[in-house]
Amino acid sequence: MKPDLFQSPDYYDLDALLSDEHKLVREAARGWVKREVSPIIEDYAQKAEFPIQIIHGLAEIGAFGPYIPEEYGGAGLDYISYGLIMQEIERGDSGVRSTASVQSSLVMYPIWKYGNEEQRMKYLPKLASGEFMGCFGLTEPNYGSDPGSMITNFKDKGDHYLLNGAKMWISNAPFADIAIVWAKNEEGRIHGLIIERGMQGFSTPETHHKWSLRASATGELIFDNVKVPKGNLLPNKSGLGAPLGCLDSARYGIAWGAIGAAMDCYDTALRYAKERIQFDKPIAGTQLQQKKLAEMITEITKAQLLTWRLGVLKNEGKATTAQISMAKRNNVDMAIHIAREARQILGAMGISGDYSIMRHMMNLESVITYEGTHDIHLLITGMDITGISAFK
Image 1: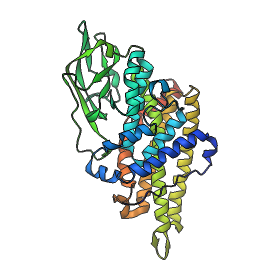
Image 2: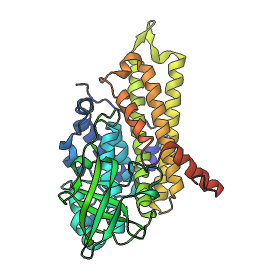
Image 3: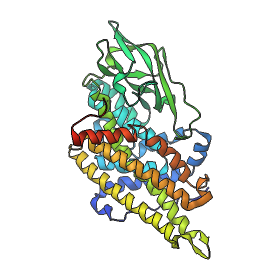
Image 4: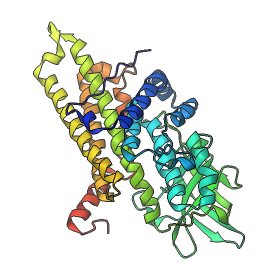
């Protein structure tokens, strides 16, 4: 087992822009990742298994709903703190960050923002502590980038709703205690429903044979005449804007998280290049390797500045959907290119499980697609700057 020697790059002294609380939150998350994730994650990725035992630790470092008010069990932190936690967790593994992102932004966020007080008090404290784990059902077998065309639906049966349909590519589904499910009512309006494990007709088959996010549990959500209590409908927002608001929060976390994966690949490649001797000197002394490393740190620094500014806007309530899309698209694209270049620096060792790079590269192939594909985010920016939608 190799020791975790990671040192975070900060070429423009961005630490000077962070508060003491931000740094404490980051160091707590970084230390936990070094102790609890790095030593085991390669084995779990090889086994294609989620390390379920880390859930308690994720809760302890505030990874579940860090911006949720303390009265509901959250840490009451700001959005930069949330971003820094996601950055450190994804430095360990994108799949582990996915687990935390889903819990925070796609399960706790809609209950907090769209739920009533009874729902908040019933679910949020248990989700924050990790006693309950959740998942988010929007994507369907035939509708990914076009969620408004979903066919999952519910009908009013007087004293309950009857839910039918299916969702797929759902992180946390195999072990989730609750699911926030988006479905159409009889008028075609999209609403969120809280579905609990154990409801008759609700099943969560696991998705196997993944080459990406192998240490993350993925599954389907199947609804076969599921009776849902009327008190489980999220009352305070409906329409497609409701789930898209959740995705804004998740994409914001991904924008930070992808930097963590990029930093880990860069740090690994830099250390290897200084130690690997060829033609009687370290390969770090060759022009081509210096070009790769210099471009990596440049792109990481640009992403750090972009995301820090987005965090400030988020704290001020000014961050727009289009701004979040830009950061998610840019930073994941940046990270996947750095992973590929880092793999080249390590040569054959780059594909080995002795190093994290190939795992990051495979994981990022999912991250660049989920929560809005690379191309869809480009069109979101295009629509924002031109005022013309290219979607239809």
